[in-house]
Length: 181
Image (tube, rainbow, N blue to C red; front, side, top):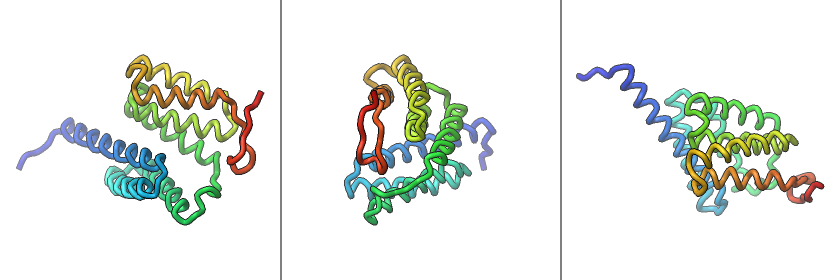
């Protein structure tokens, strides 16, 4: 029987975490696509992610995956447009997740950049558009410098920054909006 060193176990653990994160990213991609087939795919990816995250003891991301499953199930039940949620809670969770991945992978990793975008979205939805813009400016610059101008992370952060700079003001259920002056 072969015994593994602490370093080997640590490396295997990091590989497992990376696999789980990419499962989540794929789930988010399918969820964003929005078709019924893609939402079903996303549901399966998030369920797999929960199983793996529980094995890793990562309860924070288990909550995030469960939240995404709840959003998908609400869409399937016809309640997707009327989902009410606590934006302050979203902000706290997004901040915790961003800090976690920032400490774990560093600011240049695509997963950290994506979590930063999600934090910026939560900031924006909590009427903190200036803070969201500052964070997205930093994320886009970091991604452009490290990954290049055509990398998915750079394009996504730049697009999100453009959206924030448009200064949209949403009315009630976010179905109606106008540009602020």
